[in-house]
Image 1 (cartoon, one colour):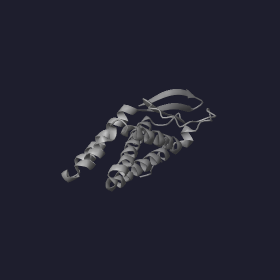
Image 2: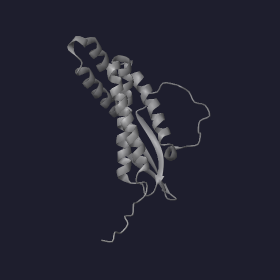
Image 3: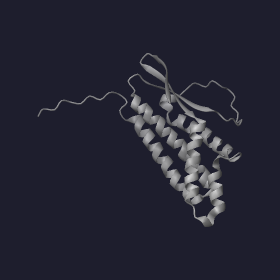
Image 4: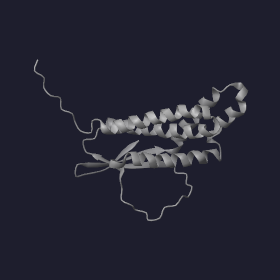
Length: 174
């Protein structure tokens, strides 16, 4: 969900928020579906795929989400760039309840494009987390999820470059 934070000098500051529990819910559902379609002969593999949200396993997912949020911020660099506010960074493990991405967009930026960005980022994060987990537990299906994540990334980049301002249609002489 996006929140219009501030508006000044023709620029809006918007916060895109992604709730960890909603991301985990979708990640667990995708992993469950992947595990459920495995053959019954692969019961151990099924168990490993489905257990993505179990204690310990979810820590890996959290690390992947942290990494992918950083990548998304970098993808949105023209809109999300910020001056350095921390001189020392650490790698302390934290479970954030909400991931936020602050972006500055032109005042004419479309709400529909903003909504599309939110949905694509959510999809991208879910696909990357599932892809990473499957690269450990079911390597044969990891490439499928890598492709899904790459498609979401491409659509995200395309959404950013298309229709940044209002379009004017030239009058046609019939």
